[in-house]
Length: 453
Image: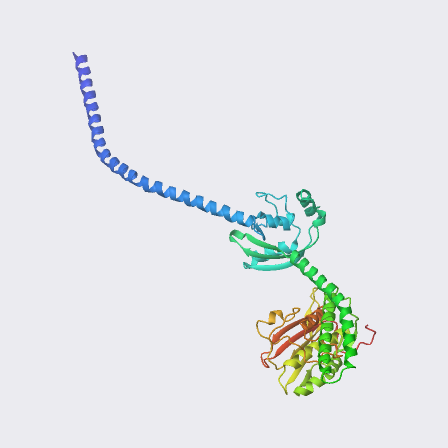
């Protein structure tokens, strides 16, 4: 009986424990089920807008990828070269035109190599570094000399077209515009200016050939006109005189063009350097123009060293000041003074050594140059409002001046450049007239004791 009571009590206790666990689970289920239902409803309510947002983002991503692909295709077939490098100057991408200009036909997108390893151009590499350092747009022009390995890379790409890679190794005149990009990257636009230069050279050769051919018939026409001048009486002879002036103007134009072309091809070819006392040469030029200065009552004022010697071609330098002073005389106000200021300056050369140069400022009190004309003053055949008209010199003058044919100042600039100098046109802030600044090397304050010729 005792054992039966023990087992009966154990069964009752176990039954009570099981009943309590069932009740506890039922109670907890009653608490949890309403909360889970509300949460599920919230989650289910967020799913549709979230799905729409994801769909919109995916569509925008596809649109951006398509736009990027379109822009890349446009750049790839653009007539101007483009390349992009990362912060370590590694080439990331370049279009077909850039590959052709820089002989990168074998380069493929995805290859990561230093730009300087692919293109042996320190000018291009320096331009990229300068753009990254200054974070501004940079422009540079230089002559690109392809390396032999670049030529061999291009050989396989050109043999199919029947063009040898070696024949394409000629230097190219390039113009690059670079701009900074995010994350230290730099984009560079490349323009091959060599075809334009070749076309200009071909045009100049054609004009030069034409000028050579014109000299003989013009000389013959002049001889005929001279014969007529001696046989005609007034008033008929005035028509012959006018014809003579036009023939002389054409002869001067042809001669000027030939001189300019020769100096551009070989600037030093026509120079016969001697030691020249510049102040005396300028005074001599002024005296040769005295018939013109007297008409307008003009005077000249020289300010600078008395003994100023330079190493130059006397005839060419004489031609420079003859044209410059003639222009100043034409546009100076009556009774005014043309100023010539000379001084010796010291400027650093490529080795940071100070070297003396001669600076000459020629200033008149005329109407000056218009702002639109200033960038083009020294271009051949350019005629501005005040820069070029027919010269007031007689057409049959023997002064050697370049009669108003649009080449005078172009020849002046070429002569100065041939001497290693420079010339700049401005308007003087005080007189309002033209202001021409010349700089010439090989200057001496005193006559050299040794033979400097």
